[in-house]
Image 1 (cartoon, rainbow over the protein chains, first blue to last red):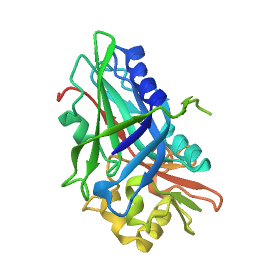
Image 2: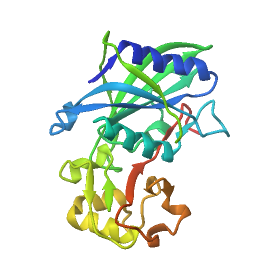
Image 3: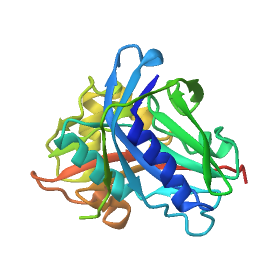
Length: 161
Length: 93
């Protein structure tokens, strides 16, 4: 289960519209619950952090977040008691389902991967997939429900130091 | 020095988000970490003992691949961050 505020949810969808026809990407900061029972863990998103897509060679169907940004986001989140609980990206003119590329490149087991389909510049469907497994050999995505709440949330533009 | 543990690997590190180790190099720091938390080893290293390609290790704000890799010297106040890569895309090829 992924819990996310309405304004964050709308903001990550809007990000996909802004970068269309290129893929957008970003980080979900928040808190994990029930870490002992990973299969049923809940991830509460309290903040989204927009990132740039470093895949200049084919940004229409690939995304990559600069690890240096991740290091800083992880550190800055920790200073405020927030953890990286997932990531989001968009699929321009492509369904909001994970691809084999998405699975092959996914390594944050226990985190949520949110995908928004953007058709002709408009965000259509947003789905979330939880990455499960005990390692690279058996990792797999599972559909997870997304609960959108009306609570006020923060959206922060990531700025390099 | 401090090693930051990313969320997916904390289950193999007693749920800690950071571990303090004493080390002279990046390699010694990672060895110290995996000695204390052996389950982390297979998630960080391939069977032949090399850091997995998707595992990024940053000394403060620098990728160790562009420093001295695992031979990079470290100081007591340094922070080592482990960040698995984030990538993907809509099409298979």
